[in-house]
Image (cartoon, rainbow, N blue to C red):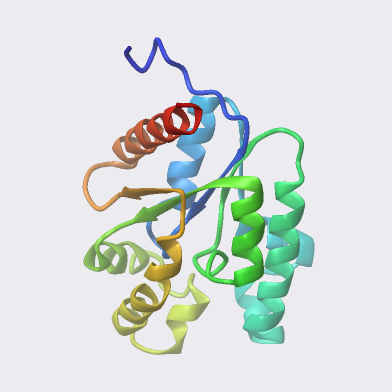
Length: 186
C-alpha cells in the first residue's frame, strides 16, 4: 500500500520532543498541514499565557517557575478534544510530571540530530535561547544532549533529522508514525 492509499488519521495528540534546534516547530507545522490538524508551539503558548517571553520568564522568575507554567500549559493543550501536534520546549519532556502527562495523552516523537548540526542551527539565532546564554553554547548543547537523551529515548517514536530538508524529515516522521500506528493496531 502506498502512503496515498493509506492516509494517516490522528486519533491522539502528537508531542514532538528533542533538543533546541532540532526542528520541532518547523517540522511540526509541516506535519500539521499534511494531517490537517492544528500545530501548537508550547513555548509560544507559555508566552501567551504569561504575557512575556520565555527569556523574560527565565530572567525574572527562574527556570523552576518557567517549568511549572510550561507543565500547566502542556496539560491544558493535552486536554483539547481534537488531536493537536505540539512542539515541546527542549526541557519539557525532561520534567517527570510533564513527561507523564505526555505519555498518557499523546504519541511522543523524539526528533534527534547530530550535535554539530544542532549547534550550527541554534547559532543562526544568537540570544534566542536562554539556556545558551549561560556559557559556551557548544559545551552547553553537548551537556544537554548527554543529560537529556536517556529521557528523550522514552518517546514512542525516534526520528533522526540530521540530514536532508525539513520536508524530508516530515516525510520520515509520517513514515514512522504510520509504522507505529500499524504496530499498535496489529
